[in-house]
Image 1 (cartoon, each protein chain N blue to C red):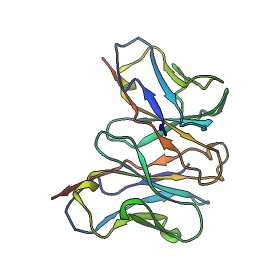
Image 2 (image 1 turned 120 degrees about the horizontal axis):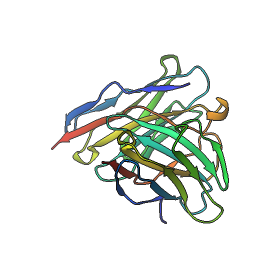
Image 3 (image 1 turned 90 degrees about the vertical axis):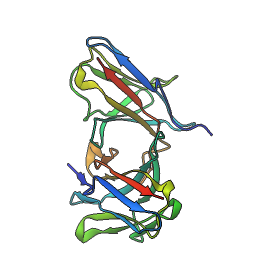
Image 4 (image 1 turned 180 degrees about the horizontal axis):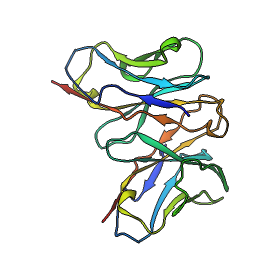
Length: 115
Length: 117
Protein backbone atom coordinates (compact mmCIF):
# COMPACT_ATOMS: atom_id res chain seq x y z
CA UNK A 1 0.00 0.00 0.00
CA UNK A 2 2.12 2.85 -1.30
CA UNK A 3 2.01 6.11 0.56
CA UNK A 4 2.36 9.58 -0.85
CA UNK A 5 5.23 9.71 -3.32
CA UNK A 6 7.28 12.76 -4.09
CA UNK A 7 10.07 13.22 -6.57
CA UNK A 8 12.72 14.20 -6.78
CA UNK A 9 13.77 13.90 -3.15
CA UNK A 10 16.54 16.44 -3.66
CA UNK A 11 16.72 19.13 -6.32
CA UNK A 12 19.49 21.62 -6.96
CA UNK A 13 18.84 24.63 -9.17
CA UNK A 14 20.74 27.78 -10.02
CA UNK A 15 19.08 31.16 -9.61
CA UNK A 16 16.75 31.87 -12.52
CA UNK A 17 16.06 28.25 -13.40
CA UNK A 18 12.73 26.47 -13.04
CA UNK A 19 11.93 23.83 -10.42
CA UNK A 20 9.24 21.19 -10.91
CA UNK A 21 8.20 19.13 -7.92
CA UNK A 22 5.93 16.11 -8.33
CA UNK A 23 3.51 14.48 -5.94
CA UNK A 24 1.55 11.29 -6.39
CA UNK A 25 -1.17 10.96 -3.73
CA UNK A 26 -2.06 7.77 -1.94
CA UNK A 27 -4.19 5.38 -3.96
CA UNK A 28 -7.79 6.52 -3.97
CA UNK A 29 -7.01 10.00 -2.65
CA UNK A 30 -8.17 12.92 -4.77
CA UNK A 31 -7.23 15.80 -2.43
CA UNK A 32 -3.68 17.16 -2.48
CA UNK A 33 -2.03 19.80 -0.30
CA UNK A 34 1.37 21.45 -0.65
CA UNK A 35 3.36 22.82 2.30
CA UNK A 36 6.74 24.54 2.52
CA UNK A 37 9.17 24.26 5.42
CA UNK A 38 11.88 26.86 5.70
CA UNK A 39 14.88 26.12 7.95
CA UNK A 40 13.98 26.17 11.65
CA UNK A 41 10.33 26.80 10.83
CA UNK A 42 7.15 24.74 10.86
CA UNK A 43 5.37 23.69 7.72
CA UNK A 44 3.42 26.47 6.04
CA UNK A 45 0.39 25.77 3.88
CA UNK A 46 0.68 26.75 0.23
CA UNK A 47 -2.17 25.29 -1.81
CA UNK A 48 -4.99 22.76 -1.77
CA UNK A 49 -6.10 21.05 -4.97
CA UNK A 50 -8.57 18.48 -6.13
CA UNK A 51 -8.42 16.86 -9.53
CA UNK A 52 -8.33 19.68 -12.10
CA UNK A 53 -9.28 22.32 -9.52
CA UNK A 54 -7.43 24.67 -7.21
CA UNK A 55 -9.55 24.96 -4.08
CA UNK A 56 -7.42 27.19 -1.85
CA UNK A 57 -4.21 28.91 -2.93
CA UNK A 58 -4.10 31.45 -0.14
CA UNK A 59 -0.61 30.37 0.91
CA UNK A 60 0.99 30.57 -2.52
CA UNK A 61 3.35 33.44 -3.30
CA UNK A 62 1.71 35.70 -5.86
CA UNK A 63 4.46 35.39 -8.43
CA UNK A 64 6.57 32.58 -9.87
CA UNK A 65 4.70 29.77 -8.08
CA UNK A 66 1.95 27.65 -9.62
CA UNK A 67 0.37 24.29 -8.93
CA UNK A 68 -1.77 21.86 -10.84
CA UNK A 69 -3.37 18.48 -10.31
CA UNK A 70 -4.44 17.15 -13.69
CA UNK A 71 -7.02 14.48 -14.32
CA UNK A 72 -4.23 12.02 -15.03
CA UNK A 73 -0.82 12.03 -13.44
CA UNK A 74 0.77 13.59 -10.40
CA UNK A 75 0.28 17.01 -8.89
CA UNK A 76 3.01 19.46 -9.92
CA UNK A 77 4.34 22.42 -7.98
CA UNK A 78 6.22 24.69 -10.34
CA UNK A 79 8.58 27.46 -9.30
CA UNK A 80 9.80 29.71 -12.09
CA UNK A 81 12.99 31.78 -11.93
CA UNK A 82 14.00 30.39 -8.56
CA UNK A 83 15.78 32.60 -6.02
CA UNK A 84 17.89 31.61 -3.00
CA UNK A 85 14.94 32.26 -0.68
CA UNK A 86 13.04 29.40 -2.36
CA UNK A 87 15.47 26.92 -0.78
CA UNK A 88 13.28 24.83 1.51
CA UNK A 89 11.66 21.45 1.96
CA UNK A 90 8.40 21.12 0.06
CA UNK A 91 5.95 18.58 1.39
CA UNK A 92 2.90 17.17 -0.30
CA UNK A 93 0.01 15.57 1.56
CA UNK A 94 -3.12 13.82 0.39
CA UNK A 95 -6.46 12.95 1.92
CA UNK A 96 -9.29 10.68 0.99
CA UNK A 97 -11.97 13.27 1.53
CA UNK A 98 -12.36 16.82 2.78
CA UNK A 99 -14.53 16.22 5.83
CA UNK A 100 -14.06 17.37 9.39
CA UNK A 101 -11.08 15.76 11.01
CA UNK A 102 -9.89 14.22 7.76
CA UNK A 103 -6.29 13.06 8.06
CA UNK A 104 -3.66 14.38 5.69
CA UNK A 105 -0.96 11.83 4.85
CA UNK A 106 2.43 13.30 4.04
CA UNK A 107 5.08 12.40 1.55
CA UNK A 108 8.84 12.40 2.24
CA UNK A 109 9.32 15.88 0.84
CA UNK A 110 11.52 17.44 -1.82
CA UNK A 111 14.55 19.38 -0.59
CA UNK A 112 15.17 22.26 -2.98
CA UNK A 113 18.52 24.01 -2.89
CA UNK A 114 18.99 27.12 -4.97
CA UNK A 115 22.61 28.05 -5.63
CA UNK B 1 -5.98 33.29 11.25
CA UNK B 2 -4.91 30.55 13.57
CA UNK B 3 -1.39 30.06 14.95
CA UNK B 4 0.37 27.33 16.91
CA UNK B 5 3.11 27.67 19.52
CA UNK B 6 5.40 24.88 20.61
CA UNK B 7 7.37 26.16 23.53
CA UNK B 8 10.25 23.73 23.58
CA UNK B 9 12.64 23.75 20.67
CA UNK B 10 14.77 20.83 21.85
CA UNK B 11 14.08 18.39 24.68
CA UNK B 12 16.65 15.89 25.92
CA UNK B 13 15.52 13.00 28.11
CA UNK B 14 16.91 9.75 29.39
CA UNK B 15 15.13 6.53 28.57
CA UNK B 16 12.18 5.79 30.87
CA UNK B 17 11.67 9.47 31.68
CA UNK B 18 8.22 10.94 31.24
CA UNK B 19 7.54 13.30 28.37
CA UNK B 20 5.28 16.28 28.00
CA UNK B 21 5.51 18.55 24.96
CA UNK B 22 3.55 21.77 25.05
CA UNK B 23 1.30 23.02 22.27
CA UNK B 24 -0.91 26.09 22.38
CA UNK B 25 -3.01 27.46 19.59
CA UNK B 26 -4.81 30.69 18.99
CA UNK B 27 -8.22 30.49 17.40
CA UNK B 28 -11.57 31.19 18.99
CA UNK B 29 -13.69 28.72 17.06
CA UNK B 30 -13.93 24.99 16.61
CA UNK B 31 -10.63 23.28 15.95
CA UNK B 32 -9.25 19.92 14.97
CA UNK B 33 -5.87 19.16 16.54
CA UNK B 34 -3.07 16.88 15.42
CA UNK B 35 0.33 15.68 16.50
CA UNK B 36 2.68 14.48 13.78
CA UNK B 37 6.09 12.89 14.25
CA UNK B 38 9.05 12.88 11.90
CA UNK B 39 11.66 10.22 12.63
CA UNK B 40 15.17 10.87 11.26
CA UNK B 41 15.17 10.47 7.49
CA UNK B 42 11.47 9.69 7.32
CA UNK B 43 8.30 11.54 6.39
CA UNK B 44 5.72 13.04 8.73
CA UNK B 45 3.46 10.46 10.34
CA UNK B 46 0.27 11.04 12.28
CA UNK B 47 0.58 10.23 15.98
CA UNK B 48 -2.91 11.18 17.05
CA UNK B 49 -5.72 13.62 16.37
CA UNK B 50 -8.66 15.20 18.12
CA UNK B 51 -11.77 16.52 16.46
CA UNK B 52 -14.59 15.81 18.92
CA UNK B 53 -15.57 13.73 21.92
CA UNK B 54 -13.26 12.67 24.74
CA UNK B 55 -10.60 15.38 25.14
CA UNK B 56 -8.04 12.75 26.13
CA UNK B 57 -6.85 11.17 22.92
CA UNK B 58 -4.71 8.06 22.70
CA UNK B 59 -2.43 7.56 19.74
CA UNK B 60 0.12 5.12 18.48
CA UNK B 61 3.25 3.99 20.35
CA UNK B 62 1.88 4.87 23.79
CA UNK B 63 1.42 8.58 23.14
CA UNK B 64 -1.59 10.54 24.34
CA UNK B 65 -2.68 14.17 24.25
CA UNK B 66 -5.22 16.17 26.18
CA UNK B 67 -7.29 18.96 24.66
CA UNK B 68 -7.97 21.67 27.25
CA UNK B 69 -10.25 24.14 25.55
CA UNK B 70 -10.03 26.79 28.28
CA UNK B 71 -6.25 26.86 27.93
CA UNK B 72 -6.16 26.49 24.13
CA UNK B 73 -3.74 23.65 24.68
CA UNK B 74 -3.12 20.19 23.27
CA UNK B 75 -0.07 18.84 25.07
CA UNK B 76 1.50 15.55 24.07
CA UNK B 77 2.49 13.05 26.76
CA UNK B 78 4.16 9.69 27.13
CA UNK B 79 4.82 8.12 30.54
CA UNK B 80 8.10 6.43 29.61
CA UNK B 81 10.12 7.32 26.53
CA UNK B 82 12.37 5.01 24.57
CA UNK B 83 15.45 5.71 22.47
CA UNK B 84 13.31 5.01 19.39
CA UNK B 85 11.14 8.03 20.23
CA UNK B 86 13.99 10.30 19.15
CA UNK B 87 12.34 12.43 16.47
CA UNK B 88 10.85 15.82 15.75
CA UNK B 89 7.27 16.38 16.89
CA UNK B 90 4.88 18.82 15.27
CA UNK B 91 1.58 20.09 16.62
CA UNK B 92 -0.96 21.25 14.03
CA UNK B 93 -4.41 22.80 14.04
CA UNK B 94 -7.16 22.95 11.50
CA UNK B 95 -10.16 25.26 11.79
CA UNK B 96 -13.06 23.70 9.89
CA UNK B 97 -15.31 26.71 10.22
CA UNK B 98 -12.85 29.24 8.92
CA UNK B 99 -14.15 29.44 5.37
CA UNK B 100 -11.71 29.11 2.52
CA UNK B 101 -8.91 28.07 4.87
CA UNK B 102 -10.86 25.21 6.41
CA UNK B 103 -8.60 22.53 5.03
CA UNK B 104 -5.26 24.05 5.85
CA UNK B 105 -3.16 22.64 8.64
CA UNK B 106 -1.30 25.29 10.62
CA UNK B 107 1.84 23.83 12.18
CA UNK B 108 4.01 24.79 15.09
CA UNK B 109 7.76 25.05 14.59
CA UNK B 110 8.35 21.59 15.99
CA UNK B 111 10.11 20.15 19.02
CA UNK B 112 13.17 17.97 18.60
CA UNK B 113 13.24 15.15 21.13
CA UNK B 114 16.50 13.37 21.85
CA UNK B 115 16.30 10.30 24.07
CA UNK B 116 19.58 9.16 25.60
CA UNK B 117 19.91 5.42 26.17
